[in-house]
Length: 338
Image 1 (cartoon, one colour):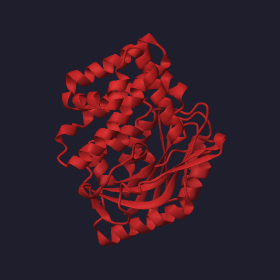
Image 2 (cartoon, one colour):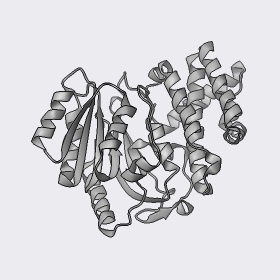
Image 3 (tube, one colour):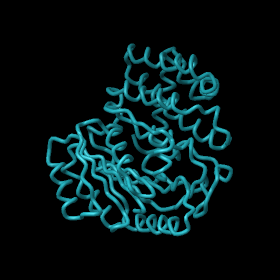
């Protein structure tokens, strides 16, 4: 069995996918690279086939009709043969030295036969337009280099929650937890992290800056104006997070608290984007989201509404909306990225 399966979702990625794949190849034959061509119309498919031909037994090119990022990730999960599983988007890359340390750690897990459900490493925002590199590390929240249960996990700061870039899940856990990402939907990376997290019993934190997350293209899905145009997809993911994980049923209180904080952040993002749009239609969508939470998820609603962000996001007066946007802008400045 391979140590690690890495899925690289690709859609019209011809201009940058080679950098991503070339770094992954440094893992040698202990790594399986699944290049999922998601219905590209450029040379992505041909490049994927070229890699498969040149690196048989390491690279697999998988071609499918366009289904979006979630469909490509699920194709990777279905086809993965590695003990652990990671997603690396085609415009991102991994740090060479950190990658080697991750593989050393996975190799030890495999030899000892007692690997964790989740391996966590750091990621770095690479905002090229602003010449900004901002690492997100988990020191203080996660003790390093030891097998952890949730009882040993500390407090996560608001900008410190685990995104897709930070996680390497045990492959079988992804299959057993019932993960099923929607097609033709952006922002499913939140579901990819959140839904399996409810099944995680053991964690291991390796304090290395592994994932380099490129941010700053004008058409990037995380750009604010792009997110506002796609607000329905953000809201869909938000709703699915509520539907697929019942927080009240999570027995471990630290695990429950961590996942609640993640949900609070995503719900705040959904709300503030509706406000930022300045559209009465989107303000109604925000109200509908909160009404749905009230009606169908009372445990989550009570906690969200009594929190400071929940109170601010539900101030329907003009001064209240100004306060919500101001809080959002301050957060952007403090974190240093969009």
